[in-house]
Image (cartoon, rainbow, N blue to C red):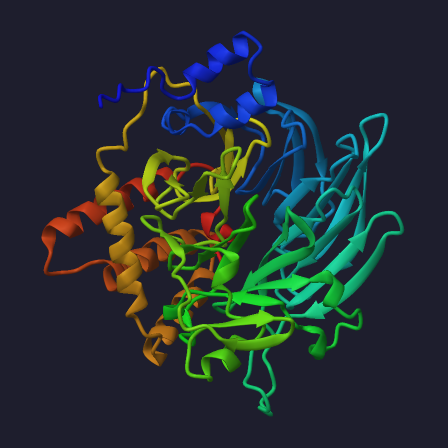
Length: 503
C-alpha cells in the first residue's frame, strides 16, 4: 500500500486548522512551538546592552514580556526585551556579584528576589514612583548561587549556598527557616563524621510542590520532600527521598554538579563540571542512601515506603555531550513547550541544543565571545535568552528564513571540547603543580600591569600542559585557532573574565 508523504511540515496543517477555528490558540502554541524546524531557525533577535560586567542570571516573568537580569556590576535590570530597552535598573544592595534574580509570580513584577557572591538573599520592592526598596532576608556562609520558587506561590521560595544550608523564605512574614545542612553519605553504622556538601543549585518540581532537588560538590543530585524535613536543621534532618548519579561516577570523587533542572514530566536533568549532562527519570534513583545500596552488591537501590533494596537492572540515563563545562558554574535547562529539548552553554562560547529523546544535537550557535553560562526559555514562545562572560544579553527567536544546518566546524568544536575534557581528567594535582599555581597567583597580585602579563603567560602555560598533544600538529593548530579567538574576543572591556570563574 502506498503511503504518501505528509503535505505539511512544522505544523503548517495546524496553522490552517487554527485559521478555521478548529484548533485552540493554546493547543496550537504547544504543537507548533516544539517543532524541530522552529528550533533549527533560531537566530539572534535582540541584544540587550546595559550591564558593566558578566551577566550571571536572566529570567522571564510569567507573561514573558519582561526579562530580569543580574550582573557582576551588582545591578538588577528589568528589560522590555522586545524593543531592547531597560524598563528599570536599580542597585541590588549586594556586596558581590549577583548570581540570580527572579521576579516573584503574581506580584505584578514588583517583587524581585536575588542572591549573590556575598551570600546574601535579598528582595526588592518596586514602589509606585519607580523607586526600589531592597532588604536583606538572610546570609549564607560563602556564596549563594541559586533560588527556587515554590510552584504557584507568590511568597515562598528557597535558597542554597556553599555552606550546604537550604533555607525557606516566606515573604508574608519575612520569616527565614534553616531547613537542613546537606551532608555527604556514609555507610550505616559508620562513625566517621559526614562532610558538608557545598551546594550550587536548587530547583523545585513543577508537578509536585513538595519536592525539590539540589546539587553541589559531589556526584549526587538529591531530591527532598518538604513534608519529611524537620525544621531544626540538624545533621539527622538531611534525608533525601531519592538520589541520582550515573553508575560510572559513583565513588569517583572527581566531579561535582553545577546545575539541576526538572521537566514537566518530572525528569531530572543534571550537569556535571568537566563531565557530561544526564537525564534521569524516577526509576533511575539510587534511594535515600546510595552508599548503603551499593554496599549490598549493586550500584543501585530504590526507596519504597522507606525500605531500601537492590535494583540491579537500573536503566542508564540519557546523555548529552559535545559541550564543555569546566570554567564556571554553568547552567542547563529544558526548552520547548513540552520540554522536548535540552540546552546548555559551553566554555567554547557556543549554545548547544539537543533533542531530549535520543540526545541528537540539532542546533549550535555562537552565544558569547568566551563562555555561555545562563539559558532561560520563554514561558510561552520558542524564544531563548542567554548570557555569559560578555556584558550583553542575547535573545534568540525562530526568525531565520530557512532551516539552519549545524556549523561547518561543529565536529571540530565538539572534538576539541572532548579532548580537553579527557586530557584534564588525567591530570593529577601534584605538590609541584600546586606550588606552580600559587607562585603565579602571588605574582598576579603585584600590580595591575603585572597581572595582565602574568595572567597571559599563566594561561599559555596551562594550555600547553593540559590541552595540547605535542605529537599531533594538526590538533594543535585547531586548538590554537580556538584559543586565539577566545583571547582576542576577551580583550574587550575592562572587566576581568576570571572574576566570573570558580577557582
